[in-house]
Length: 247
Image 1: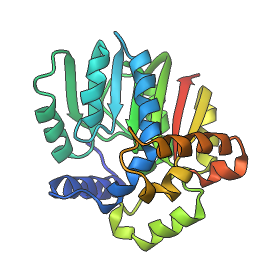
Image 2: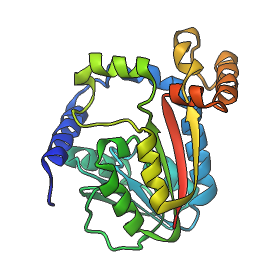
Image 3: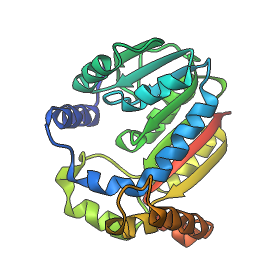
Image 4: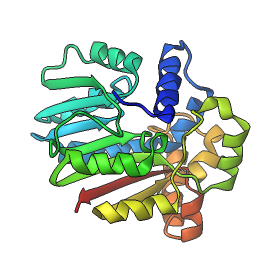
C-alpha cells in the first residue's frame, strides 16, 4: 500500500485513537448532529437494497453494522487503520450477508473500477486530499452510481477558532470543507444535494438531553432548516450531508 506522508500521519492518528479506552471530548457535541445521521441512514435504507455498497473509511464498522440491516447485496468496508479494520471484523463477524473489510488507502485502492452502486462515508473526506479521494470514488462507482457523505464544514469562524485552540483533538491535516471543495465535486458529479446541520442545535446543546426524545431539539432543528435557506446561515452550519450521482 503506497502512502504519502499525510496518509501515514492519518493512519497513525487513527490507530492511536482506536487504541484509547476513552473517546474524544468532542463527542459531547455530536448530539447536535443527530438529525444529520437520521437523514443519512434514511437515505441509505431507501437506496442500498440488493446493491453493491462501499463504506469509504469505515472505521470500526459502526455504520456497516446499521447498513447490513438494509439488505445490500454486498457491503465492503475500507480504512487505512489496521486497528479499526480488526475491530470492524470482530464487530461484524456474525453478519448474515456478504461482507468484506479491507485495509486500504482510500485515495488509491486496489479495488477494481466500477465495483459499487453506492459509496458512502461519515467524516472521512476532510481527512483526505479531496481531489484524489473524489477521483477514486468516481473510479470505483458504477455508471450512474451515487455517493452519500456526512462531512464537517470549515466556514463557521467560531468553530474554526475552537479547532485552532484544540489541535490535539484532531489530525494535523484534516480540512473541513469549504466552497472550493464543493465546486470541485460538481466537476465530477451531478444532481448534487447539500443539506446543512448544526447551528442552533449546537449553540443550545447544553439545554437538551437525548435529541431522539427532546422536543426542544426538534424545535431547534426545524428552526435550523429554516435558517439554512439563507446563505449566511449555511456558512454557520457545522456539518453537511452530501448526495450526488456519477456523471
